[in-house]
Length: 296
Image (cartoon, rainbow, N blue to C red):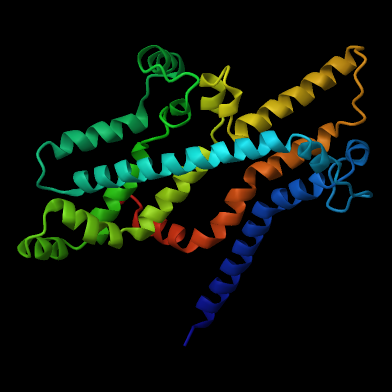
């Protein structure tokens, strides 16, 4: 039976977590409501949870570019899926390898992975290397390779999971039964690592989906390679450009451009797929974070 002190603690914890959830979702709710607000009302009264006038003008404005948006969505899905498959494969295999205590050079390999968490070459050397050496500029590889394919933090998460949650007895039994290292990894280690794989998968998906810097740096002429984030960023820049020209006396009619609410609608369009997907994998995500946490 629960004691009185434990009951009070649970009540306090539930209230605290409920407030934390409320603080987290409040900006999202305000974002969605603002995207359905009349632009003039938003400019005149500011952001509000109960706007005086609702309007779909921001989404109507986006629908005028629906072909570009759908194409950018498709590019985002392609890049995210390809990047997810390769990133999970490399991360899981490398994490499994450095979790084994009997492989030669394990300490040096682990140090090398950890070292990349602390230091990097910087933006300019990285840009020169990818454009001058690997020639990925204006190719789909520019959206896949730079700083995205392998992340040291994810490798360390997977390594920690294998070290703490994969019984050595199971691996020894597989070896006695004649299983090769590849078979052990594919048929035993990977199925048991589903929680941490789901966690890393969510991280990688969000990383690829939200990435706009690589498109900004490396995609300069082939706009058909724009992901949804690059396209929406370009649309925001165009709205700002038109607004600044209008303020300088240019004869530009901004009445048809919901400049304020369009930014809100653009943000909603960008986060919608992740918001839909997250509830389906949150259980494995929470379990993977707990089991894969690096222990001191």
